[in-house]
Length: 175
Image 1 (cartoon, rainbow, N blue to C red):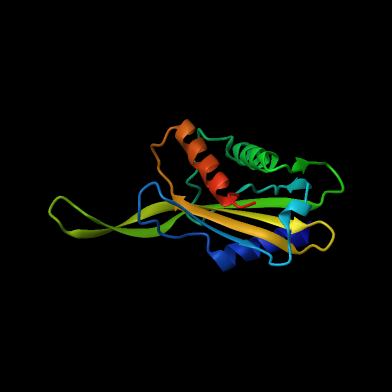
Image 2 (image 1 turned 90 degrees about the vertical axis):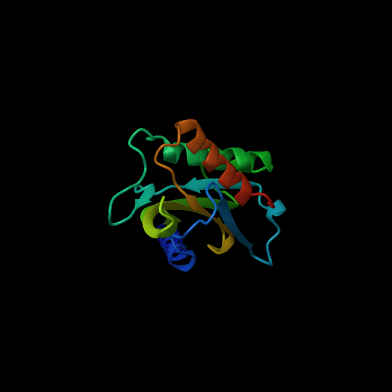
């Protein structure tokens, strides 16, 4: 279990937790599948969660205080997408483990023009969701995907959930 969480931490370093998103609303995904793996052969999975849930940056979390169900929503959307693809969640002896982590931060910088057409630099918040599938027998990563996008302070809870659901759907598009 500790090794799997170390793998997820390593993926954050490899893919980067924070990034700029040029288009408002755009969610960028990157997915990689092992060449030797046929996901159709994997039918059962077990979700691995960590105590930390959402990873916070050094300046503090950008997750709104009124969005306390973020972890539960992410798990629910992952479960729904896997179910839609014929994968069944089990509590023991899975074919693969599904693990995720979220990084939320305010370190990204974006240029914008003010009313006098002067270019200004401003902090923007971005989030990255990393989803990893790990072969239960070998411990090898068989599939991984990241979704990154800008976060918005004034977005309603339903729209936040919608963006997360869209990101997860987009990540699992080719499973």
